[in-house]
Image 1: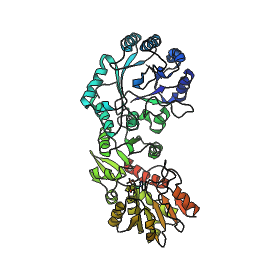
Image 2: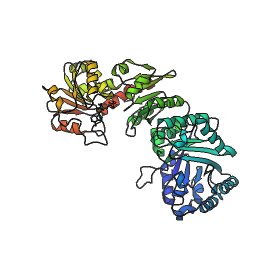
Image 3: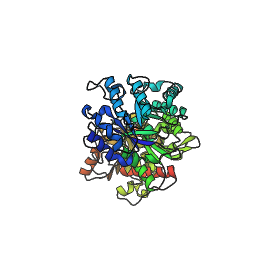
Image 4: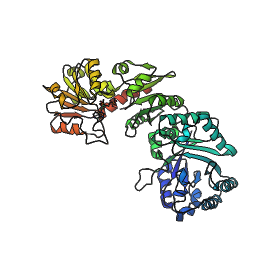
Amino acid sequence: MSSLCLCLTAPTYDGVLAQLERYRSYIDMAEMRLDLLNPSERLKAVDLPVRTEIPLILTIRLPEDGGLWGKNGETEEDRVNLFLSLLESGAWAYIDLEHERTMADAAAAAAADAAGTRIIRSMHDFDGTLLEQPVSDLAEMIRRMAEGGSIPKLAARCTGSRRLLTLARVALATESIGEKVILGMDEYGTPSRILADRFGSVWTYASALGGPGEPPAAAPGQLDPKTLETLYRFSEINESTPLYAVVGDPIAHSRSPIIHNGWLRDAGLKGTYLPVRADDIATLLETCDIWGLRGLSVTVPHKEKALAICDYSGYPARRIGAANTLLRVGDGWRAGNTDAAGFLEPLPGAMGLGSVEELKGKKALIFGAGGAARAAVHALIDAGLKLVILNRTIDKARQLAEETGQAWGPLSDEALPLLEGGVDLAVQTTSVGMHPNEKADPAPWWNPRGCSLVYDMIYEPVETVLLARARSAGVRTLNGSDMLKAQARLQFELFTGCQAPE
Ligand code: ATR
């Protein structure tokens, strides 16, 4: 099991103590970043190990490694002297020294040895090019860093799914090194911070985030200790913990981790559900194989490719032509789709109808022809509605409409003749109007009056411009929140075999 280490990033010593106090119940250890502390207060940190009863790392980071040392004219000699003054107490558990680089090294390392302080040999790669090297070379480098009983630490920027896969392979190739830290910086690397245990890391780093006047994270992509512990149950993750994830690009806005982790906890089930940003789903699946991930929620823009690369696919996914759920079967993946059922669930109620049967014979207008539209189109055809599908790229509208025997047109006022006589339902499936482009309207030329429901799959913002127009016209509205929960509920059952708690 990995420990949780809080990076102490405040510029004042009182601020450092406040950060420790605030996160005390979530953390196992802390790293004192002396380079971030005001120069006049740095020596105050001498008493930090006495004040706290947890293991502490002493770090003075250089600018090339993401630190601020030297910004106030400090020299390498000053750095050595500061290390020596603090190490004297013998109370620091660890000291972080860069691998094969600095002058300070020999003197600080000797003082650390004398004081009984373990050395962390760290390597920071902020442009991520290190991860272009062969896995065997990187593993060899980490083995060298571990020489003499040091703890090797590799922190490399992950600029895409390929580099995260390399990092996971490096972790696998260095499994025999009992104590190490391997982490990926940036959003693509975040899984390595949550799944520190799967990466064989003895600890993960977290920063104080989100408090008033709080400095930025100590490294890009870090989470705060409370989120790691309360949302992802970090301290419970071990090699037998079932893992699930939502994969998309972008992913930061996704509510799925909050929904699924909440259900896992409330149902008393072991497991962690994490967000994964991926620019290539096939590469990500290789990485998931290494982690032993059991289930994936798939979101924009990977739904169609996810179906194509799966070994097996269920009926709804194949028919819809998109997968929003991947399940591990043996050593392969099975594609599923819960979007269509999730889309339909809140619909009759929102239209003031008693059941799905009452939808039969009604006419619906669909904005968009992507993966989400495909799920809605199939659900509505099964319910017996007649559709008009409008899309910016007209060929996609034509293809989906011809596949399903419906009418189609462009996403412009040229489509108005197709809507003569009005529609009962309008379904908005494009990303137009979604946060952060909240002022956008996918069809400013269309008047919702006369329609009985406008259903927008977007859930952030809660009310899109289109929904606001519909409401002003006296039309009922429904956003994507209920659909999100309904499709997630079905997914949860597929993932765990258990019903999602109310
Ligand atoms: P999803 O799985 O969410 O449906 P998708 O398959 O990428 O994602 O589909 C996105 C939909 O939003 C498409 O209908 C797309 O129109 P195009 O097929 O013309 O790309 C639509 N869309 C995205 N941005 C749009 C924009 N600025 N204006 C109009 N439609 C847009």
